[in-house]
Image 1 (cartoon, rainbow, N blue to C red):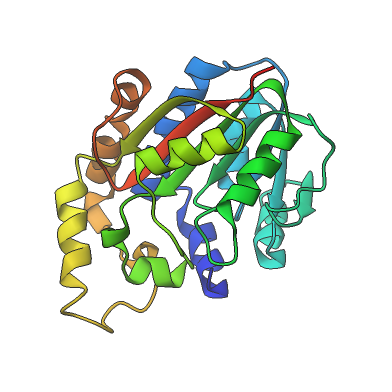
Image 2 (tube, rainbow, N blue to C red):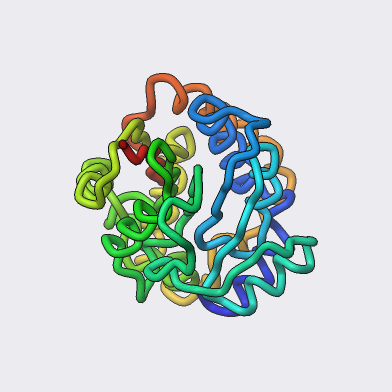
Amino acid sequence: MNLEEYGIMFHVEDHHWWYLGMEQITCGLLDQAVGRGRNLRVLDAGCGTGAVMRYLQPYGRVTGLDFSVEALSFCRQRGHDRLSQASVMSLPYADGAFDLIVSFDVICEIGVEDGQALREFARVLKPGGRLLLRLPAYRWLKGQHDVAVHVAHRYHRREIKRKLRLAGLTSEKTSYANMFLFPVAAAKRWSERFTAGRQTGSDLTLDPGSLNGLLRTILSAEAPLIRSIGLPFGLTVVALAKKEG
């Protein structure tokens, strides 16, 4: 992503509604799939500035990996020291090194071949280990935010299930997320076609102000639905997969 976006992310992700809502969704899925307090070996593949590593700690011993020196510098400011600089397409770990891998909005980026990254995730997962992905949905929603954070591809749920299968992973759950706010966000992305140039950074540069708490509540309310029945559409695809064997 653009280098300045790391600084923006670092300063907002502890209180911004989107990050806090996604934390609720993520922990809901992980609580159901693997549970807390099991001392799992956990990899955050594409850890960014390190906020996710914080809430992964109840699940085990967390390692963060990112290609960006700038991102890892912010991780160290958060107190994380178990870090690696590398590409998700060439992980510097032994086969079967991890019980759990999470990778959020990474394999969709410019320069990443998603199939290779998924094969690497499968390689370093132990048999019975799990992978949790979060990815942007629907190609027609591509906008200025994608340009700022270097998103090259947006996914459909069927597509990511197929790619997981090709990588040797069994899909356990796929769902969309951020459904309740979908109409507002879709209208915003559509309007960008007629207001080119007004927004120069990612959506994180847009201050929600007094609406932050309400938006967080709306997104967090999706967590039990995604954990149980799943959602039929949304701005994001979440996928949980298992390595058999």
